[in-house]
Length: 299
Image (cartoon, rainbow, N blue to C red; front, side):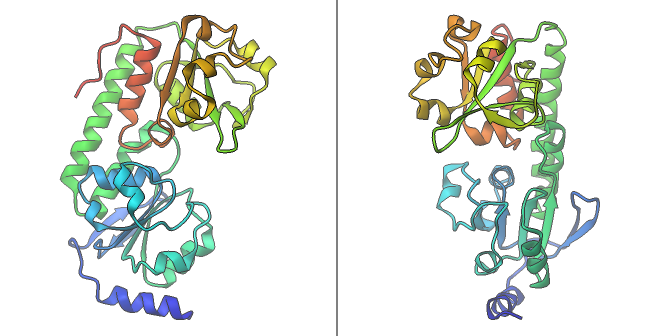
């Protein structure tokens, strides 16, 4: 056994439980026994946001690089990107519970954490609004906050149901093109089977790009042919490009209905694509951008 793993196991033995032992169902339908949730590492921005929303942030001893909200999460020890985790970095924080989504890895690291005696709880990670309440309830149960989690999950479900109800009265679906600016400055657009596509549909729009799945570089000719009524983008991307006017002046959008009507909706990346506890509020915000006559989201 590697020295660091042995040391971590020693630290775990002296950690005091933060809640009574509970059984939580993971993403594969298996029962995971959580005996100690006093030192939590959260892998995935949506999971970290849920921890904060439940008022359990004092348990956090580390987060991954996608944990950007709330701002306080950025000050916590970082363990790297969720898909390229390292065993040593996580074990150095002596966690008693590691929360991950099914996207986390690599599998060898997750196996090593389990071998070191760390409880690992894998929760749904797909970009689906229907799975958000399950994530909230799973985290809440693991952290000994079931009542708080139930209240939050119910609020999300109620807001999503209300949105679906009002959208049934809107048979015409605006054409929405999602634009993403990478850190290198490259521009990509979202096709089918993406978080952006799921959010567009949730908010009552129609993805302007259905010819392919995933994200691809933006081609001017294709963007012109898509003729979006609305451009959806991340706030970070809009700022990187140079602001709203700069986005709508891009060659692919300059002659589009979106540019003519100045219809650009921008939302911060994690809120827009993370499918965390803000998912219903974000969907309502986008929907009101698509349909200005919609009422505000219910509380």
